[in-house]
Image 1 (tube, rainbow, N blue to C red):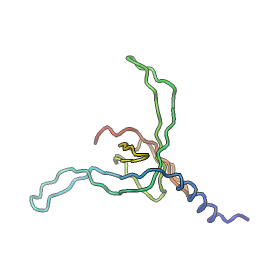
Image 2: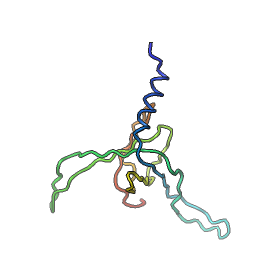
Image 3: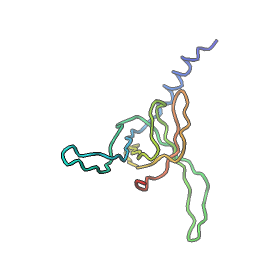
Image 4: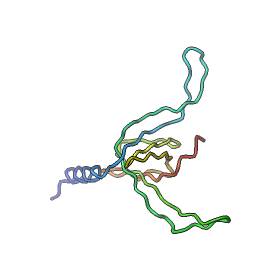
Length: 126
């Protein structure tokens, strides 16, 4: 009989061994100045240096628009299943010496060993 807990632990260790990057999670929150009592929105980093991995895939070879053809690419983030990334958060990933800013474009697929989140380029705060 297979020990399920041991198998899950081994699977998680194997997946985490592929993590080549680190990410920070940034949220846009209302912050009240204690002295002036003025509330302003600011970028607040809620998590830093979290091990992760970006995976890239070609979704469609070419997407035709009115002006030009564009190549469509999917970007997926692999990260620990315990991490919560709120909708609308900015995800800053550094992998292989390259920094990219993304936002989650869908509901995460959460597994016992990891979670997978489809990303899109960060275009600004809503």
